Length: 258
Image (cartoon, rainbow, N blue to C red; front, side, top):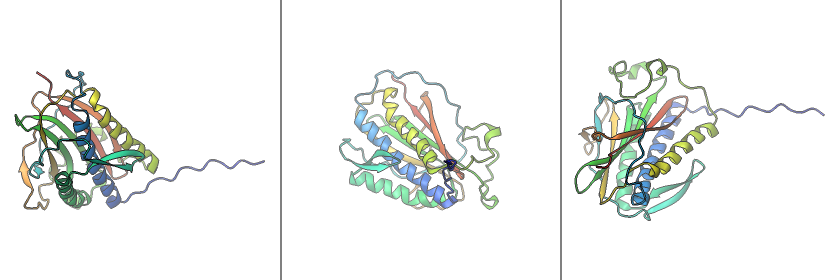
């Protein structure tokens, strides 16, 4: 009785456009997940944060674009459940938050497909003090970027804290299951961040910053922004995911309690 050899799992051959849409969708769910974790667990967090390994300093070399901050959201109950990435994802049902994220995603999709984005940042700010208390940073590396779209900053931009010798070759093709598993790991880490993020009190607002190329077309409602860094904050490097066209690294910074 002969036994057929096991077949290799099909590899996910995403086009640049398909990969761009996947990354943009990942950002949409990331924003919602960060908000849900903040609202759901802010009173359950540790009063004193667990020390974390230091991340490399990040130099600001591209301009950040942002929309005006959204009004604060008061409750984690204003979220709907969706199945995505083999996980149960939470998406805000608050009308103001939904409108804000929709406006972001409408422009983000265009910039992603055009290969214009190097970073997306979600910043949570205390409404009472104006102090930035959490900063979630997603660095985007684009492989095989067309020479016609090269940025003059390509060789000098050190913003994506990756080793110089690792900046070249794109990863090998992966199965859809492998890509999904990497994304799952990131969302699990975001949810588990409650174990080391310090306790936050009071109302907060959030901003989304997008680092786009200088030649990007920018809608009128978007404005230039500072980096909204957290002074003397702690940094934790989370996991990454990649396709044959993109790699996304995740870093969270937070204010250390007094």
